[in-house]
Length: 500
Ligand code: NAD
Image: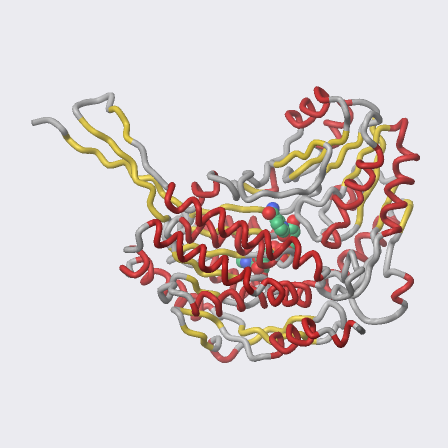
């Protein structure tokens, strides 16, 4: 069957073409002045959808609706097991429509349908179920007083109205990284998906409306970052902003929140080191290193975009990674054999192309890839080959800045100390990988590298239970696991005077 005849693609295109609105206070509504913003189809370059663009007045209305819902007995009065049941129901509803969500995600972002269907959507469901499980386990503590005859106990209370701002690389999954713990803790939310990829958030909103969520608990505002996102981040009625996106925008969010001392947590960019020692299982390391950067077209905050290889195996190992890179099939995301699809947008394609041509102008050697895949000719779509660059200097832009595309720079290193020095020579600290069969060396590296996640003999897995977040300019706060609850709860100490 030709991909153009795929019923899944047809249905997703039909959904994308329908008029889109904002979800505010349980009702679908147009943006003030009927403002809209358009998204691109990554496979064709044509217009995919016209989204409502929430204006500052719409943000006011949505925040007011979320504030009102915080006091709604239908929400605040739910027993923990009832709130958990609601979240489990939402997870079941998404899972029942897994194929539909996967097709929308693939169409909107360009990611291969099989990745959306096997990774993004199932992991989003898992994440929601994981946090639904926490709802009945959120507990305070009692404290023995040092200062008098008191009983002191603590309560964990929702932080309030949470603004959730999400990027475009794993749209539904990263939405769930925020929405699931926020709701599990009893908050209400205003969700702003990325302007490039809002379809699954809107579909999620429809499911939420069909379930028993009281109006205003989940509000969804589409629109561009500088319009809708900026108004949400600076809003005095928002108690907490949970942001995932670029480090530059993260700094704007932190500054906007400072005015009202809004609680802010930031999951930001990365330039992750991936270190291969000569004593590694080289076959596993070559495959893991290639997929550690190229998976999801390199549009991954953790992507292993700086590959450090011990000098005695450097040439041989780069050849092995090149073999993997050249074997990766780039094509239409709805074709079953495609392993990589197009980049998300024309703007992003221009950005990735600009980084690679800049690196070449700075003297980098192209080992593999470097542009549009030859077999796709001059056809449409924002496709880019898996690209390996070498012979770069440590201060080159391509080494220091996040490309967020399928581009890796390879550099040799001499010994353990050199590996740690190079790995840490970055403003970022999100993730790192190390490949070696020497247990002590692996753990010494894991302890010395300044990154929030370290993979030993692997690169890339995530788990709802494992804390995730950045050191340095990769942000602050930890999502996932019990630590994520701290981002969405306030602790209150209650003192009881026991004196007669
Ligand atoms: P981005 O920062 O441009 O946008 C992210 C979100 O912020 C979008 O919803 C956008 O509309 C909004 N936004 C943009 N400008 C804003 C403003 N002035 N005020 C408020 N909101 C604004 O990032 P992107 O291009 O969508 O995503 C790529 C970036 O996200 C990369 O840097 C990547 O590393 C990072 N990322 C980090 C993680 C993580 O968990 N650490 C995960 C995925 C992506």
